[in-house]
Length: 182
Image (cartoon, rainbow, N blue to C red):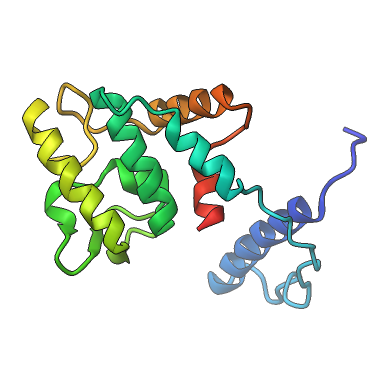
């Protein structure tokens, strides 16, 4: 399409071709793998977007702690920054995954489909204990961060609410930025 192609895109093409030609070679469809000596391009790492500590404090103040949704989103935002979890992992957490005494959380549905533990600060452990007591008064759900109907909160719903909170203080924020900050 007569547009420049980034080095990252070229590397993705190379990886895909390598997989295909490796398969052809393994299946004995070809005698020599033409991709064998082709290596990936060196790319510069992009600096990831983060938010400042002051912006994070202002962001937390935008959540209405007197409502179920506001308190839930406040706790989710803090836990994402405290643990570096992905938003999908956080939305799928269940109350039984918490080990507040040992300050850790079992992440069962990770991107790599492996179980792993993430560790939380003492302050976050206190906040989570408070959240679970509060949540249990309003909704009966096995999920740590449910909707008011007890279903797991969707990634898109949280992203929208976080973006709207950021707009209130004039910043562009998304869940992965909190992981970058972590």
